Amino acid sequence: MSSILATIVRHPDENLAKCTLEPLRLRKELSFHQFNAVLEINASDAIVLSVDAPVISKADTGRPLILLDGNWKHVPKLKSCLKGTPIYRSLPRVVTAYPRRNDDGLDPVEGLASVEALYLALKLLGHDDPSLLNQYHWREQFLKSVALFKF
View 1: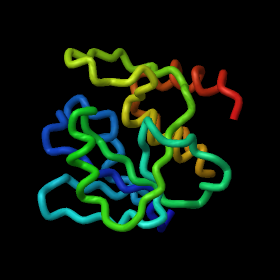
View 2: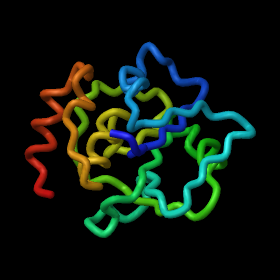
View 3: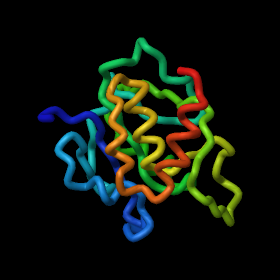
């Protein structure tokens, strides 16, 4: 696959040992960037996931995806690197398989692990590739959750 399907902007405080996206770092269809003060990502006409936006629809098929990878308190800062006019979309409420722990109370109920969000968003955008989950410990449980959802 030669074209980029998703751009991942990772906050520098992310613990790479626990990051569910780290095993995907060498995939050619994914572009990883570490956030910093000078990073600029062209987000024009790209889908950017946001919990307070309309759900991805068939009309969004074929658009590139930008995934902001960091805990919920870092999202406003991560958005500052986006240039142009992104299209904010949310994901349908699929239950996460990731055993979540949240001391700050900032995670929305529908929050997914980053690799879950990536897989589901790309699936909805027309790129169903379960191999994205190959190294995800909770892969089977998550795929069962996705299978229960009617797209």
